[in-house]
Image 1: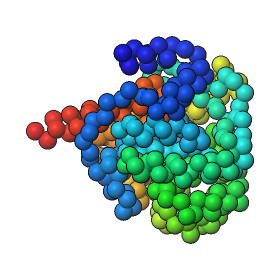
Image 2 (image 1 turned 180 degrees about the vertical axis):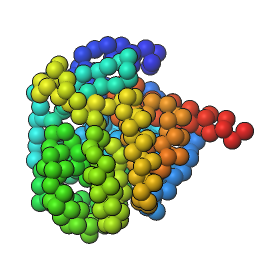
Image 3 (image 1 turned 90 degrees about the vertical axis):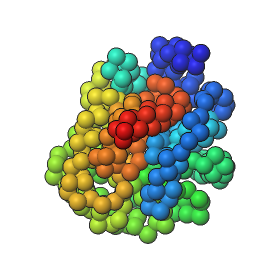
Length: 321
C-alpha cells in the first residue's frame, strides 16, 4: 500500500509532491516498519546507531522531525538554515528525472530564518534523543559574520554536529571565488565546541579540492562530500540548478577516494546518488564515515532508510560468507 502511494505522489508535479509529502511526515504518520537492528558507528566520539541518515535539503527548518525520528535514520541533517528569512527562488524550482533516479533543484535556500528555527531547537533535540537519532545542523551564510552569529546561537544546545554549507549554487561564488575569504572563515569558526563539517561542491577543479582538503585537515574539521552538480535546466525559473541523484554517485565516490588518497584523516559524510545498500557499503569502503541520502528520500520518503539498511546488511553478509 505504502509503495503504491509513494509512486502516486511521484507522478504529481514536483512542488506538489514536496508539499504533500512534507505534510504527511510532519504528522508523524509515516507507516514505516523499522528494521529494529543497529550497526553502531562512532564519529568524533559520537555514537550513531547506524551510518545512514538524511542529508541537508529535505527538512530545511526542522519542521519534519516528528516523522523523521520514527524512521530508521541514524542521523538527520536540518537545513541549510540561513540567518534571515528567505523565500527562495520563484517556482518552478524542481524538475524530476524518474528514469534516471535524479532531479534538478534551484530552491534558492528558502528558510524561515535562524530566529524561527532556534525557537524549536530544544524540542527537536529532545525528540531526537528519545528516539536515538543524532542531529546535525547545516548552516548557510552570505558572510563570515552571519555564520558566526548562528554558530554562537547554537552554543548550549545539545546538537551533535554542524555542517557549514559553502557550496550552495545560490551563493557558492561568495566562498569559492575567494580562497582568502574562505580561509578566514575556516580560521574564525574553529572555537565552536561541536564537530564541524564543511560541505564542498562537485564540478570544481582539482586544485581547489586539494586546497580545501588541506585547510579543513589543518583546522580539524570534517568534510561533507558533496553538494549537487550545477547544470543548466530551462524548465527551472532561474535557468539552472543542482543535479542530484544516481548520475552523480560515481563523482562522489571518486572524490571521497581522492581526498583519502591525499591523506585526509578527518571524518567524511558521503552524499550523492545513493539508492542501494551496496552503494552505502562502497562509500564506507572508499573512506566515508557516514552516508547521507537526499534524492532517494525525495522519491521514497522515510522508508528509504529501512530499505537501505536491510540491503546493506544483506550485502555485507554475502561478502563475508
